[in-house]
Length: 250
Image 1 (cartoon, rainbow, N blue to C red):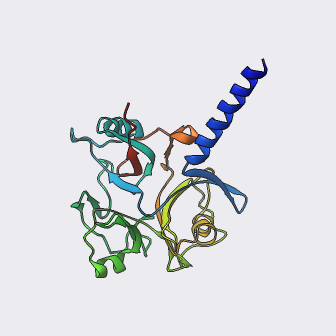
Image 2 (cartoon, rainbow, N blue to C red):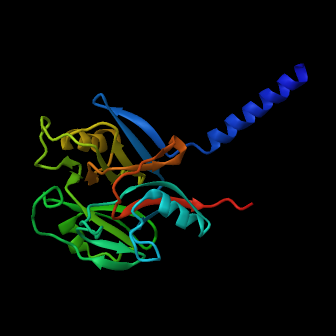
Image 3 (cartoon, rainbow, N blue to C red):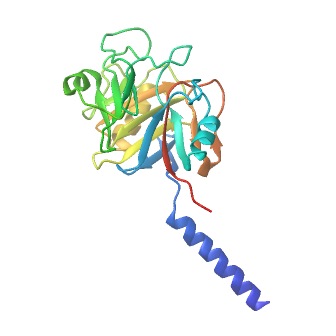
């Protein structure tokens, strides 16, 4: 019996050590007494954007994207909706995938959250480094991204909150966004309860240390984090942003 207990203890310790070596990229964060889930990655993580399946139809759901990637020996580690879109799932603003631009940059003011200037662009350069840049600054920079998605409003611009945000703002929705910290860490966050823009933006500024952060969407905000048992469904999405790793071979 003692031998069996010793073996079980060793197996338990080995399992715990293995889990410690591969921690989940996503974790709960409590900010201003509101719960969020934050998924964080090093600058060299394989972050990407996807819109359409090779059959031409939008992926729409995380499961469909994950199955496609699995067929290519890739595992979808994390994903969330990656920007606003029209009814036919076309991106509202700039969209670049694998170096191919399918929608142009929009710099004029307009209705809705997207048009609440300044808005911005989440983009990944040819070296795989992620960036968040205000749209006019992006236009002046004129980079050649491998991936890019435009959304709005900006949450944090050069360390300051968007000027239109109010701490007492009454509009409370489930929201998701992205920011790059001063040390290069890529942070994605989603609120687990309805929050206003101001609260959401202070999460990026004060907790995640991101000098620039971008709102991706609200209401339809969804998360794919299998390590947390989360694979949220609902209305089909347009662009999806995520991180992949190579699938383990047998």
